[in-house]
Length: 246
Length: 193
Image (cartoon, rainbow over all chains, first blue to last red; front, side, top):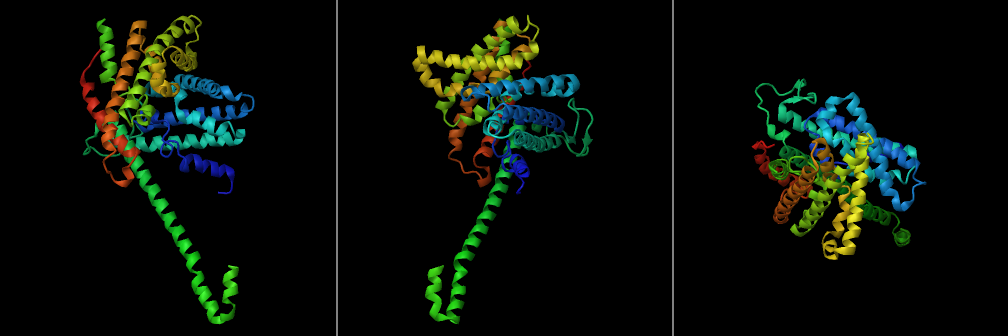
């Protein structure tokens, strides 16, 4: 992980995942995960907006006066959101119909403003683009995993088109779909359980690291004793001097 | 008049902003730790959303439509809302200091509350008239306030519960929200308007 680009990507996708770790942008996370296709559509839209707005903000970061920077960021972001919205309307009308309101609402998605303020305004354009792409991918993966659970449990199928047709049937005819997972209640429930899982894994990793550190500490502090003992046995006269050196 | 009543009823119960439309989840989870702060946030949102519904409707009808630049509505609306929030803040500080004291800290947060921009965009999407837009904005905000207040009450009890370690914090909150959403889903059987 010496490479700064790789490090930044890991940061955006895993260690600082916008949804699971920073808990930003909850509205689209809950609203657009009724199916995997919707989630991916939303994810790609956010990746596009985040990358372009990060690039642009990074380019003009030295021109914008400090006092009005937030307002300027919002204008820049809403410009790109409008561009993405019109593109989706023109080429993917089905996605537009199912995501509807949540495409223009990317403007007030806190992830984008947070990356603009915390990263793009302080770093060069290349790093800003990398950060935009990796944070966007982190967001998309989070949406994807939530939508996966909701769509499979809610319909028994996966990868159905936005209007509910097509898709691969995963759970056979014996499975009666639990429609609750497509309703808002199911969205909260799924996200709650996934976050609990994430927290569990994070706790495990921390425990492991902690154990390792404790073991290392024990090794470092107490390993000296037998070594000193050995030294004592060999040349008992010099122990005091050696101990002092340490 | 009957139409406006239907719109308001639907906005508060059957299409509650939080539990069925997923608008304004951030403040819903962020400032619902105490009923008093929840009420403050709810009042601030109600105030801003009612005014912004009126103003954005007028901006759309009298500026964007005549100039045929409707596609700029997202940019125009977010600017209008940001300015409006600043303006309301200054106005309240000068003329209604008591209300400013109560709402002050919540006002700046509202600019990035997606419920406000969401209601402005929904008004246009549904083709509401001026009166209907204002009624929709006001009622949606009332629904938001009600949801956040109910949840603040739940959260106070939740503080004394001991869920499994990995469920502490956000996960248990979301699961409680899920139960609340189920209750609200009961209203959705009513077909209105």
